[in-house]
Length: 301
Image (cartoon, rainbow, N blue to C red):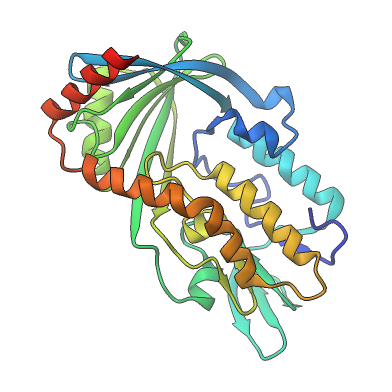
């Protein structure tokens, strides 16, 4: 989106980084990006919600993306429009007029900076010197087995303080857990009961709760500023929306970074607040109460 600007994109990993995200998104993504069909591993139309022996089936409209191919696709598009440096940013220094970016190889000067650098954002630490209020931790694996045609979501307290899941992929099945604490215990409990044939594993950290999106010299996007849904930990769509708003600000002669933050929060804030309230309510439920909720939900659907 910034192809008409003088931009350098710093990417630490030449072949992109380790697997951090399972890439399960709603079809809203198709309104935000021209998605090639080869990036879609599976289209899933319903999910089964489970707790104990109780379950409920719901209709959904989601896509399972090959996240690595998606990142590669976006990077290749970016390289046609802007300069890309495969260098790790070690330090950022703010001067009166500019921002100085120091990598392992070189030093660069810029008028503005955009931090799309994840939960441990060096941009955020430099300009805001603070952390998001909460973090979720996720771990997942792929199992070489025949996939079904639905997602399964598990709310049992022995599997997670949030949820665990099974998701169909192109020619394998994904097993995962996302939680606020005790990740190893939850993950091991889940896999012990499901017994997948593990061929690959991934791990990710997701910042949650409200956070500043802007500062005098630039902005943050995505996990760098917790643009994430508190109920699922998903942030791909929020990040794409924020990117479009950011690009519109950079088209102005003098970008207003606080206006970028205001516009983003006008879209995300209500949804995030509601999900945080539900998350607080959910954290107090016993498995028995979760089962009652699922039974009531099943009757309604």
